[in-house]
Image (cartoon, rainbow, N blue to C red; front, side, top):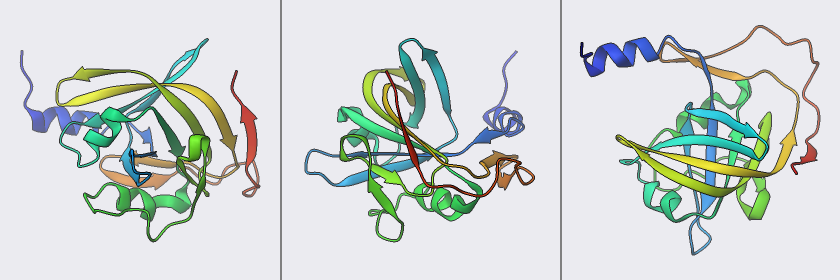
Length: 173
């Protein structure tokens, strides 16, 4: 049995996902990034995560050569940022607040969590590449997660964990 790309896309849209912005720098130091809902934990020992990137993305060559990157888990306050980084715009970093993260990678200042990673490996997977990163640093804040469900950004009802608090570094082993 085969499934059309349209039916598969509709079925996949029924899975609610968190939203991330993945960032890195090229050899000249210029920042690059993309919005991703394909993000997951892989292992706690060693600490590994993954993100998937389309081979047709304008930033694909940069990420294919990258040694380090940051995965920024977005809050409901970051919907505009998610939309912005989902475009093929040349310089996505002009209108938003970033701080230097792990290895000077751009870190979203309002992110709920930031994973600073070294590239462990990358695997071709159809029209995407699966980038696996070894987590070297983690920063946490409070807030409500941005979700993507049925092709729409949305949030959860207000959380019980309180208002946003300043970032707290938490080091991975």
